[in-house]
Image (cartoon, rainbow, N blue to C red; front, side, top):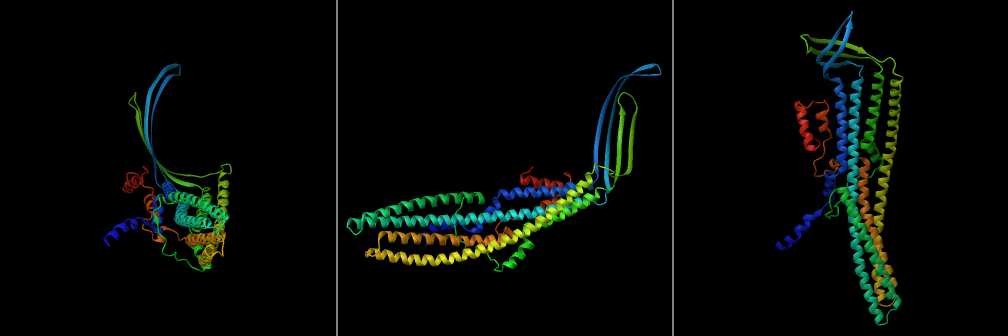
Length: 456
């Protein structure tokens, strides 16, 4: 028993489940990393817009050397002086009819839309990993099936040659067996090439070489009611939620464009110091005031921006409508694919059973002289085709089931309960939404986060 365990333990340790593959794809996906970075960029748009509501403080310094000659009232004198000045200016937006606040809200809606884009990308990554896993298993079984068929054909060829030596069959029967063996060798080479391509796709989709892939124990749970699934998809699919957020952002942008036509009120302050380096004169100045300004005529720009925002709002509404139609179609197609795959699997099982019986019968009849070598080869080819179709149908059932989850919006690491640390899309936003400066405690915490991301 100890020897058996020692032999089988390494093999079981290398076994890889579909959940293992999906977890690796989630951890290694460069596409997910790319879209997480795009989400962080969208988070910063909120901070950039929010900063316009904060005091804006600038400093300036100037050193001026003046030289030349001047004549006044008949007297001429030289000019030779150096002046220096330094000053601070501050400005605070007091009121702009809500334009900046609307822009902040629009940026927040864009962040929520980008989060849904990230969810959609996650579903694409995981569905591709499912397909890669299943296609490696499909092609691996095809190779094994072709190898077994090749060994069987080699036996058939040896038997045909032996029977030819004793005069039971003709040279034609031997040639037919040789031709079928050559065809099987070609089929095996093609299957091995398809397996190599499937492995390369697995590496691209998952980020590493496949292990010993295990057959999934069960299908994911999917509802049999297509209508209910479509309703669920319209409520929860990330593409639908993204389109809805885009419409909301466009509506807020229109309101902000309208508010841009109105005045804004600012609090302005300035302090400065001026000094004449060549003399004793100097000056210290300061000012505080409230200013109001607004557009009168800007060449039609503001009206054009408003109309542009309305056009984009209409485009996002149309995109939402198209997304709803596409998602419903995807759900319907996914269920149709699953039904077809299940029916094909049932038919394939019956075909394999019947082809097995037929092959065994033809082979026995050939031994008695009632069947030719070609009959045996044809029966064997029929059995091979039936087994190949059954393997494909079984794989297609799993792919179709996971495609249903993707079409509904439930093919995510959280929904599948994968053993990975899921990415929190709100964590970075919570750090930057108030536009922290670098010297603040929140800014220092943000610096540490950026260092851990390797972005600084």
